[in-house]
Length: 135
Image 1: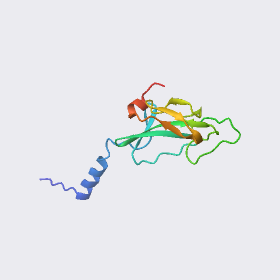
Image 2: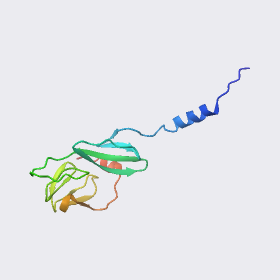
Image 3: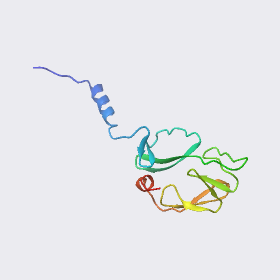
Image 4: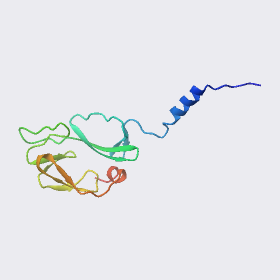
């Protein structure tokens, strides 16, 4: 009779490794978005920004390049894209203060306010409507 002994540490290590099956780690394309696991560090975007929503264990982000500003001295915020006085930089486009437009989630309506502030309606959205909506 052949006897097989499995060490408890090996069993627990195997269980730990297989517990990650089905998880998403690293940058994954999801429609027009990039999908990350909640808590995962997202790479810094050079000359770009992202708009994200969290759904369950994942974060879905629309990533975009910053729009080119047309003023001599743009305001460069700590986070986000540069903008000129009287405008907003949002989703890779420049808007004038008081302009209204569709938000990046594809559902809500946004408006440009002073100092690059973006106002938004509060209609619920999900990753599918944001990432698979035709642009």
